[in-house]
Structures are given as structure tokens and as C-alpha cells.
Image 1 (cartoon, rainbow, N blue to C red):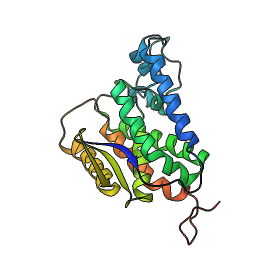
Image 2: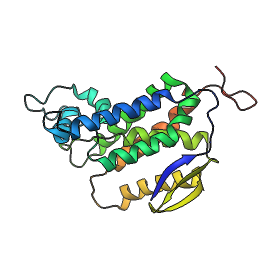
Image 3: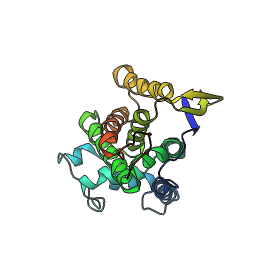
Length: 229
């Protein structure tokens, strides 16, 4: 297990990753609203209303009256801002904080938002297509964050990242190793892992989307290696 804390890649084009911070703020706000009980039914109620339920998304089931407040297709986006626990939220936000700024820097603010939401939607669709329990809702930013991880790995494979190995040991490690091992873990869990509440297929789908989408969405790079436009 590797928890990223800080990387050493400077911003080259933007002054600050404003929309990465906006996404983080909205996600934390959604957590506070649902965890505090301000949303009827709390986290569980929000998951049914705004989470991705494969059976509902594909038209094989419908939600009870009072829960069908969000169109099923829109839950591909609303689910990204909900989390089942504080640790779930914290892990995703740590990864987004460390890697999101450089990905946003490579694309610009608004293309990054489209990229983030697109990766999340593709991750949710991947999960829904492979779900073994299609009645269970999926929530969390993990798929979208996995897209950010994939993009960062394409953009900065030689960068070094400070983090905690096994959640304890501080270590500076190359991004290609840290994130590559993260990907291997996701694939291992899909192939050999036991059934858990973690949406491993969403991680793989989001990561693949990030790897593919970062190239057409990033700014053109000058011969001196600096983003243009």
C-alpha cells in the first residue's frame, strides 16, 4: 500500500490548479452533507438516489417512488461526489491533490473538468458492465481519480513522489513504480482477489480512460517541452 503525499513536478502553464481544488471542495461538501444526516437517509439514502445502480442504469429495474430523483444516466456523474466513509474520501482526495494539479496543468482548467468527469463516467460504466451484484449502488471518486493516475503516469513517468509505504514508512519513489504497482494490484484483485466492496473494475476502466484521453486533451508541447496555448 502506497499513500502519496507530495510530488516534485512544478506547474508550468497554470498559476494554480483551481478546478482540482473546486472538485475536491465539492466532494468534501457532499461528504459533510450526507455524513451529517442533512440528506434524508444519510449516506445510504444518497447512494440509492445518486449512486450508479447497474440494474437501474440498464433499465432492468426501477427505484421506488421518492428515490428516483436523479436520471440514471446522470448518476454516472453524481456518484463521483459521494463516499461511503471518511477513509474512502480521504484516500481519493490525497491522490487527487498530489496528481491532479499536474494533469490540470497539462490540459487547462475546463478540459481537465471534462477529462475528470469523462474518466469517472467510463469507470462507472465499466463497473456496471462487470457487476456481479447489479442492485448494489456504486459511489466514490475512485474511477475518476484512477483516470488522473493514468494521465499522470503518461505525462510524468520519471517524476518522483514522496509517500508512505505500507501506510507507515516515508519514501521517495519514482511515479512509474508507485503507480505501476497500484495498477498491478487492481488487476490482481480482479483476477485473483476475493469479493469485496471495492469496485476494482471501476479503477481499471478509469485508469484506461485516463491513459487514452490525456493525449488528445493535453496542450501541444513546444520543442522545449513547455505547453503551448
